[in-house]
Length: 285
Image (cartoon, rainbow, N blue to C red; front, side, top):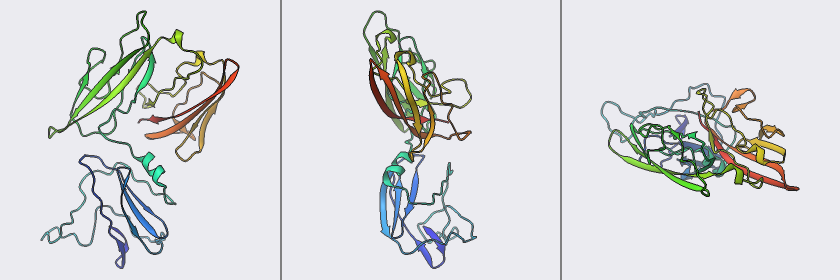
């Protein structure tokens, strides 16, 4: 229920899949009120007028005047749980913007990636209520029973590129299980030309000295970098360089960003031709 005062309130309902974390967005325009759960629209109703933002009443979550904690005469229940983040925007977000805000739970945040032979990386997961973890195969994982181990795929010995398939099983306190997977392509750096720039899909500037910066993984394969740019989800450029060895530390206007999705754009020269590459990546905190 969204309530401005006793005579002006709106009730929206929506169903969500089973899970311990959920993402809720309420988007209001002049005439519509829409609710999104976990990135998907679940209800849309007409609404009248605008809210009075000059009100001095406190913003409350999980409360309603119809809740009867004594006699339980209503099926409404007070919210129980934890609010991780709360954002208020001065305009109605678009469906595509809302979709990019949602970060799934019980997933491997480190998506399918490419690394050089002999290399390793630290994996990361999204939010979860799981208490047990099981990586497979375990031989090239530093600890198969933790959520964020170091993964070191087997080296190439005279062979062509190789592909490894990893799975992670999540198990919560009730015994419910969920599984996600990760593909890792292992390549010989001497066989990579300048036609493909390698970019990580996740980095974690959290102070543990592992995967702290975002950068071009194969800078020596680039003849000349014209520009390497990073944009936020609103399309604003937050970082740029023409140094192919430069690394972004995750700071926006001097402040370290929270968990967020970004877009990168690279323009470079390869064999006398100008090449361009774009993609998305995630900063995990």
